[in-house]
Length: 592
Figure 1 (cartoon, rainbow, N blue to C red):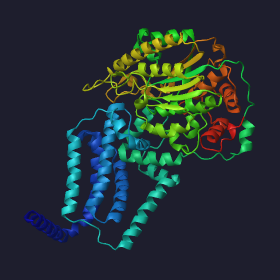
Figure 2: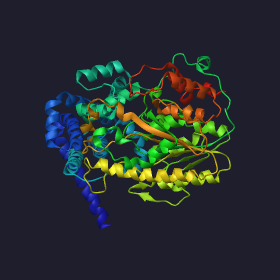
Figure 3: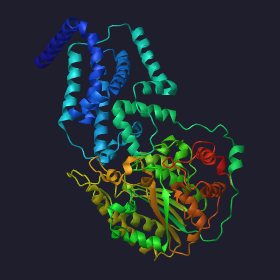
Figure 4: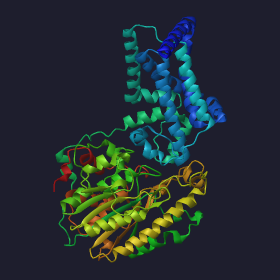
């Protein structure tokens, strides 16, 4: 009872102290309201720059960006203040969000060398999985900025800083802030003029290097604001001529199967597998790719252009699963996020399922990462096997599941299934970060990465050799999802000159097709093609039935072999129309 009385008395004294301070310092409230957005901007930018010198450079050389940031911060803070009235709550909500986002930016850049973007917010629900990619540590700057934020909350709380206006005026103020935000976000003519006035860079970025340059000019708040506007502006819109008649007019006739063989078809998309021997100056040892070269000589080696670099694995996954270009979806970072998850999707898994195949998707990582478990359930897979669903012994290589486990899982499914199999596997073994725990990284990250490739190469060789003993016709497609991006400490790409704009090479990936029976390799397109054509290429060479869609893509492969935002080419109305139809439209192209 005495404790409760002391707590009550303490609460009363605190309340009286705040009321006294509120009256005494009320004349400073306007000044505090102006100061808070400025302090929030300084805290946010300093938290990811992590350098006093860097902050001076920001204020001296990018003062226009600093002013833009203050305006954005002021609008957001004012909106929250109008809603909650009390300044300490507005500071806590606004400041905590900015602090967390700036921490994410700092750690993401330290780990991957790429910056946090608004699209990354889609991964918020998978924070635990994302954290596994990063090396987290505490710095004095992170502590200082947290203390600064805490001090702002305490000061505004003790001084009882709040809006002393009637509710209807606060409501009007909130509506005004929302109107400004909507005008800015949804009317490009307005936002672009504002960006230009403050010299906020808004040029479209076709690669990670260009995106990083944009960030270096804009810094975090302006960068996130501009990328948000850009994302909204790039929302995929229905083609003006979209109709069943328009789709029918571009579709080629279907073709019957050329032979009676229905082989197993296995797609293996290997995490960050890439042939670095294309950079002559690196003098990469051929032994790292010994089995890859051998298998390619036995089968087919091709070149493809993938739609991503250094991350966003699901972009390449989408192209290989759907046989459609990400470019036609305005280069969506996570293409499946814009799909209707209540509909069954028009994928190659569904094509094979309709041909009587057993289908399965294999990924030795969390099923919730990128929301694969929910979205891919609409792709036509009979089974989805994630890390917790593996039915073979699990082994790790460094941080992630060994590629051997994936190959063993594929082998088991091939042996168990009575019908021919269509299997799609996305590996995880050689995912970033490319440095051991506690190491600083740097240019030795390439060596760390190549050691992982060497291990994959050996496991791939053993897997293919085992398929030679399998008494079932089987086709294997093996391709890397993208080239790796190293941490900010690694200068490999800079030393190669790739970061200076000559970046098309970083989207080029070699791939192999191998079969354990008399497969018609000569029917495969030998010239470089976009990755989304590969399933069409394989289906055609295997002599399987060509639906009107597959037949159309075969024709497009001959006319427009490369269609990617990373390579300069004119828009292709046929590819754009058919992609919209199958991914977002009525799927008129599904009819035979």
